[in-house]
Length: 108
Image (cartoon, rainbow, N blue to C red; front, side):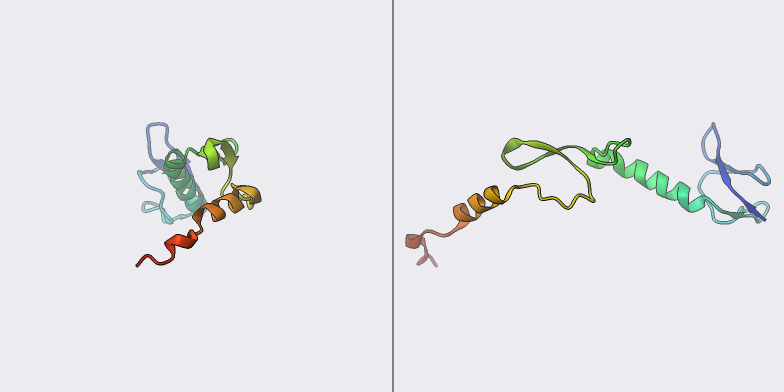
């Protein structure tokens, strides 16, 4: 038999086959032996819900709400964005500021 876990309004879950309750998502119902088809979906949702507040992730967009960027600017970003946070000009400024001056190269 294959069944699913349904969310119990009072907390926890129950098997759609035998209607017995469990507090955590399980792969196989301990009461009727049904294979639970959606247990991994529940685990992923729980983990996402746990992590979302730590990184200020907006549940609607999946992007970080407020991330301070270079020079105090705020940008909306996502973990899958491949655009740089800093423009090439700003990177060049940082590199020139980090270069050691000629009179400081003899420091041991």
